[in-house]
Image 1 (cartoon, one colour):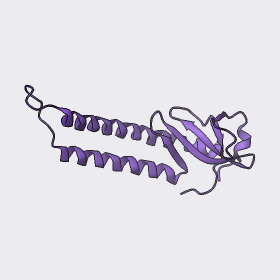
Image 2: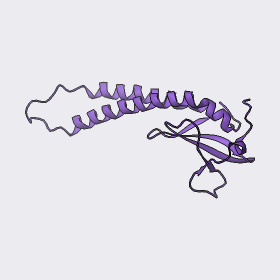
Image 3: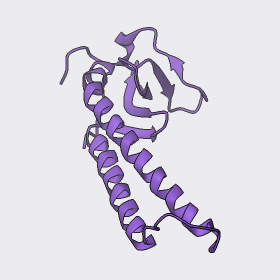
Image 4: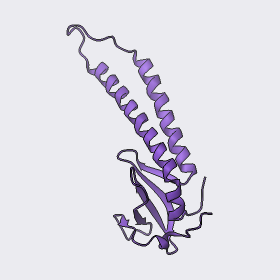
Length: 144
């Protein structure tokens, strides 16, 4: 796991990997939602109201859901090893610890963006992310 602040240049170099993992997370999340809905329908279905489709045993659905949740956890931990912390799976927001002019900040990347475009101060002075205007304030352009 990376323990040091990442420059914006390092983060932008990681984004293809992060984009791929986020796409996988979206697929797993969708699968989990389908299973959850299926489980909810089975619980709320009233017996004896005509022909009902064949029910999948709840133990099978629970096992499938547990497997998908384990895959989601695995992908999240994989991203953390690179210093990427997923704040939201949907729509997809990932944060990276960095510095701006020496002060600790979080760089924010939104799913689908080609590069990091926002940052948030960790000193509590800002409640909303700010647009990145000068990338040179966020670390050395030479990757370490």
